[in-house]
Amino acid sequence: MPVYILGIESSCDDTAAAVIANDVILSNIAANQDIHASYGGVVPELASRAHQQNIIPVIHTALQRANIGKNQLSAVAYTRGPGLLGSLLVGASFSKAFSMGLGIPLIEVNHLQAHILAHFIRNENRSNPVPSFPFLCLTVSGGHTQIVIVKDHFDMHIIGQTIDDAAGETFDKAAKIMGLPYPGGPEVDKLAKEGDQSRFSFSKPIIPGLDFSFSGLKTSILYFLRDRLKEDENFIEKNKADLCASIQHTILDILLSKLEKAAQETGIPEIAIAGGVSANSGLRSRLEALKYSKGWKVYIPPLAYTTDNAAMIAVTGYFKFLNKDFANQSDAPYARSAF
Ligand code: KG4
Ligand code: ZN
Image 1: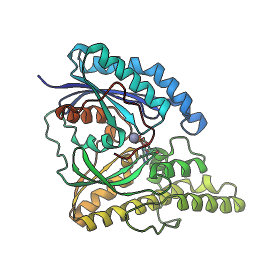
Image 2 (image 1 turned 30 degrees about the vertical axis):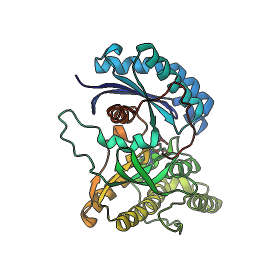
Image 3 (image 1 turned 120 degrees about the vertical axis):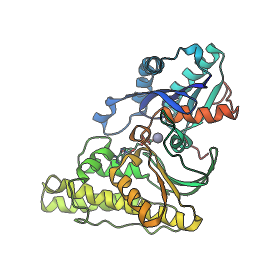
């Protein structure tokens, strides 16, 4: 009998549930919260209210699609943090009640570890390659930018991270300045495909070691556009694609130069990317190219496992279940953390 785990993710603005049989996903459901688009960003109070409304139907659908009754579940795994506290509380409270009601173990999951462990989800015939230890993972999301050495499923060390803004935040802020809808990352990605990446250049930070900084780039985009708009109020409209391509190119240069440095310093040629920004088509194709030029083994997650999802929580839950690493009812969600 396989281990069936229900994974629940509610750290930000996606209410998500997935069912896994060992390391193979049976269902992966998410309800996105459109309400935030009109505010140009996630409004925490509205996010937790929407989680309250979505959580039961989303879990119901996940179980139904997996064709699994709740009494067949071996455990329930939930995102404990980091994230928005009000959002996390909804998933945590539901999971605690559900595990207690069913008399099955509760498993708490770190959202950032889960983004990385999504690489260990197997397809139906288990033919997809998974990274071997140790590997390097560039985790790039709306709230985090990290280079992690992954020595084992739960033996991870951050060797570089942003000292200010995250890469996803930079995509989103640049998009907002250009008047693009939220979330900006996918919009910039789409427009960048038709643009000239060498048309505009933006300054890149000089940060020692493997750390990143994006706040200077954000400011330089802001000032650049402010000055150009003084000369031509339609400047953004006329140059949207070239602006997106140039901004995306700069962000990717910053990310990839540190990833190359990390690979060189550690001598680790197994390279993975994870998190929402790993959905970026430019990042994915540049990494594919580095596979050949650097002789790396590269792991790029399927799009469904890049942005926030519950499949990654379920697979992390599976590995914790094997370790009998169970949580307590008294564990409180946390807004910030390393691992
Ligand atoms: O991992 P994620 O879904 O949530 C967090 O844990 O933060 O990441 C969301 C971030 C957002 O900043 C979003 O704009 C960005 O990922 N993102 C992208 C793309 N798709 C999502 N950024 C660039 N290109 C994309 N295609
Ligand atoms: Zn995330």
